Amino acid sequence: MTAAPRGRVSPVAADIQVQARTAEGLTATACADIRENEPVFAGHYPDFPIFPGVCVLECVQRAATDGDAAPDPSQLAAVESARFAGAVYPGDTLRLTLKWRRTEAGLRCDAGVTTDRGKAATVRLRYHEPAGGTR
Image (cartoon, rainbow, N blue to C red; front, side, top):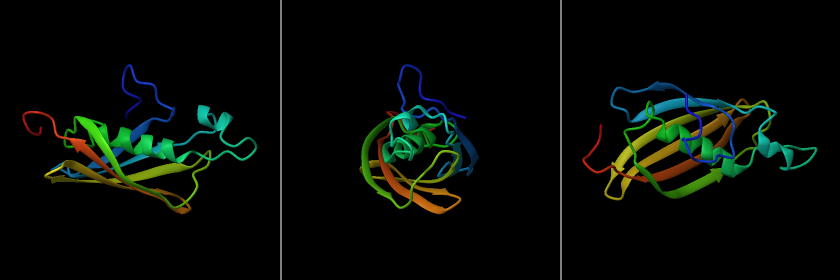
């Protein structure tokens, strides 16, 4: 389970729970329960709360950098793509599927995000690899 890293402010109060990871560390699944008391709902749209896309990205980033889910990325280099396909509402559970691959540009993490209603987002993040290789 991962909360926002120490010393870092996050717009998301939800804990990200890594549920499974392959032995090679190249795929993982995680989930996040989006509670009705998320601070972002107070102003993101009054009387019609929607979990913002940037908060979905934050959930993916936190799952990707969780020590149990990742092949040890050190620093986010870029959000290479983000496509939002469906709204996320209070009470939804985000299910995240992460797939890692190494490229000349660094580590890439492709993530699919779903709720009970179907696809919510697809995201591609790129990370700098840590000095000294992988764990």
